Image 1 (spheres, helix red, strand yellow):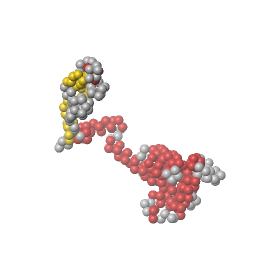
Image 2 (spheres, helix red, strand yellow):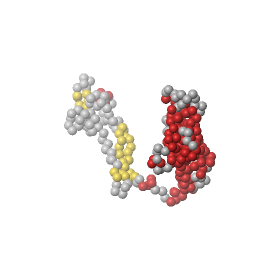
Image 3 (tube, rainbow, N blue to C red):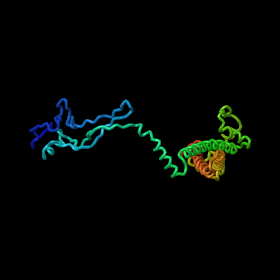
Image 4 (tube, helix red, strand yellow):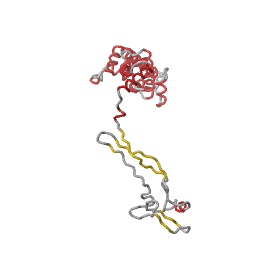
Length: 284
């Protein structure tokens, strides 16, 4: 139902050109936009065989069915505040099979393998195996770094080499929680406390958090030297562990070096967070 209004604003004619009721409160239509759109689009349907039937859609223009000049009189009023000049119309349906995206023919897989081998000089299976081995080497290196870090912390805390070695072993010993109050662990905590206090060159503790962080980053302070020593032992153990498991020495050195830098910074910002950051760095 369209509405034509005269110059004085009075209703002078109606016509059923839009197949819609444009007069408010005209039941069952409510408001100017009731049933304006004529397009009805089917919803996707999942079939019993697992395929999905989807509607195919295209955009089409719509003619308001009003003579030139008439629409200008009513457009933007309560009788036609807006009009949908373009609408989506369904042109048909299509069937989508999700399994087609998950499966490849033997010929397609052989072609992918061949192209991969030509580009990288190694088969995809060998590359995947090498990647898995490298990942395990990195994770093992993180465990070695934890042991090395505990060893260094114990030395900083005044432990003997023997007790420091016990502390390093305890860092990766799953049963270590049964004996927390032993000498190696106390030495580790003492060493970590020395770093955490951020003691300066003169032995005084920095008065604020920023000052303590800077002291832990400064090699010339007691806390900075302790942080560097602990990080160095951790990096060394990381490197040795990876090489022992077959990693290329250059790759292991680069990986251990990256982990050491991140751990050093992490310990300076949040004392004790170095091992966690070091482990996370293995995955990036």
